[in-house]
Length: 181
Image 1 (cartoon, helix red, strand yellow):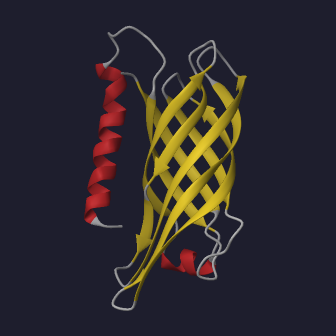
Image 2 (cartoon, rainbow, N blue to C red):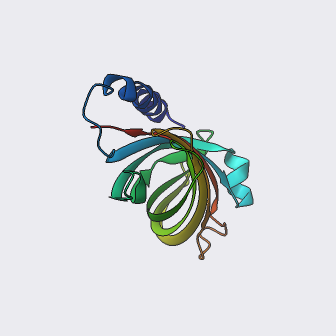
Image 3 (spheres, rainbow, N blue to C red):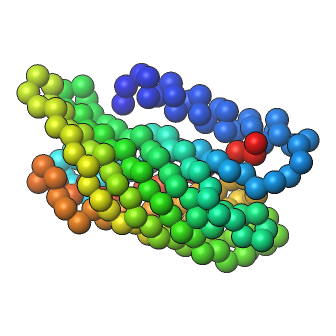
């Protein structure tokens, strides 16, 4: 992962962690955005060999809410990559997810979800190859909220078409926060 991506990731996590404290005196309303740290375990063996897990940030834009102000659907954009400098790969998922919630307590709930997306994939071998494509895919997820702002998710993405003889789907492990604005 390049230094620029690592720096962006650290800045996003610090802002996301501090934002709820800064916004605690504002009028409560549903959060429109969220950020999360994503760990990706690719299913393709060449991709795992490059590096596993892959890490990167993602931004969620919440589109619909339930009566308690919790998201029921969202769009997400992620930036994931791995590599040694000689061989590098990246995955930029742009997805839509529909959620179904089950309350655990007044501030916690678990949820399942499903959705679809388009994935921008890049595979680069230094001085030899730099190839990019876009592939459609589907996903399912299970998540749990730890408060009104913090959550963790496990997501499985399936891309029905192989590219560069590899399956670019896999398992995503997400931790994140909702940003009140």
